Length: 150
Figure (cartoon, rainbow, N blue to C red):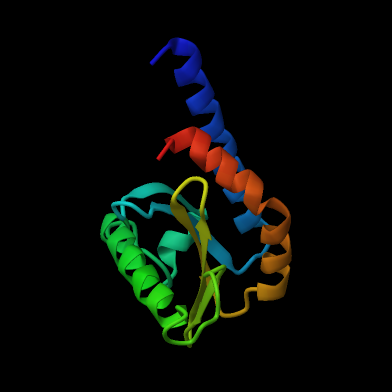
């Protein structure tokens, strides 16, 4: 890989991390973002807020790697559930998980073969986050593809 290619990968990764940080900083209850490879379930990027590791919600800073495999398995099961043979809902676009302490939003990124996970406290403004994501999800997918080239 040439130095120009390495530099463009580094720039894309930095811009991707900055973009995810802007998203999680846009809502005081969002605590972090993760990007997971859908081929192997590998964690590609983890962007928590500073206070996120002190919360009792989301990854604690140790199990992020294992979480990638769980996300991959979960997506596989959800895709089976919404398939034509079962619920016939079409292509998976988003998954929202609501627990008694918090939320998780998962969005597949097709070009980069990855899944974006946003997580936060129960008070997260989900509609606002959906609107924001709808505006920039293609940019996130392009940056992830350039940064990780999966």
